[in-house]
Image (cartoon, rainbow, N blue to C red; front, side, top):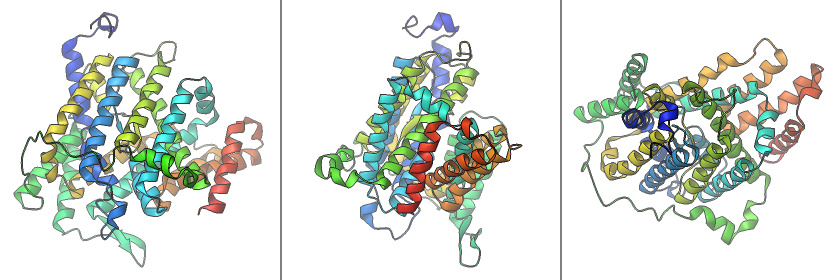
Length: 445
């Protein structure tokens, strides 16, 4: 075991790897609650029940997809990097694809499946580097920052801090409402924990908020702590395959293409960025390159395909893995530990009854803060870069759509670069995306 995971070469041991894997799990365990609440559109009242996914089934899919992803990354790529259904992509899945586009969640899962399959092909070929290099770094950073703003906006809505206002479109909600006060308390608690660099601060912030909510009767007490009768997965398992088998013609349209490309794009570059960032932190890069990059990307792609079949949105690498690396993790064994913990967490499903939108809202807000940090790396001094980057970022929360933000930014980028006399610096793939997104606005918006 030690030899397989390169313990001696990496200067690590079982104790460091187990602590690192546990730390990573605690840092990202919030997804077990946030993902089911997001995909079931729990914060949206008076919604047609057919548009909601089954909470228990999504919880199971989340835990299993995370476990598969972590085990694949640990065993195949041997990196201390964990995976789970991604924040931002789950919001796009729920609030844009289902709520805004009115596309059934069954078809949305098929879109995730297609993006994962394409990702597998790209991971097995050299074309992935071509695509990565085609997108300018500034736009990649803008997409990440925009998703952060979008997630924060959703978190503020779920908390009741920001609400619809007929005069100003949005405004402050009733800050005296019990659920809103609980969310504000949770936000302050989580911020304090994060500032104090408490490992798993987001997770513990949710636990403390849930405890306070139970004390003041804002949230219900759990019916049990452990239950070996796990939730039924049948409502979502294999549903992603149904549109392919029953009505493949429904998938042949620009709208579905945009959905697949959005899932693929965000996952692809988020994964690449996270892999490099965490590997650099762990001093695993060699000559500024990531060894076994193909296997790492393949693990992510397989996890996405598995997750879609199980019944969840795109599974991707988590920057929270850096918490485990900071705790000493250096090998894939840490990711295996995290994966096993996700499997064990399934037995504690009853505890999640105490987790409401008010409890998870601070997690969304804080994750948004972490993602917006990418803004500092964008070259704002070049106006031809600043315009598409800014429009990409700001259009996501204002347009309430990640896809819209990507589309607007990718349309403006070739235009500003050509105007600046730098058209030759734009990769042909970017011109192809320009055409695709123009068609997106013409036929879909």
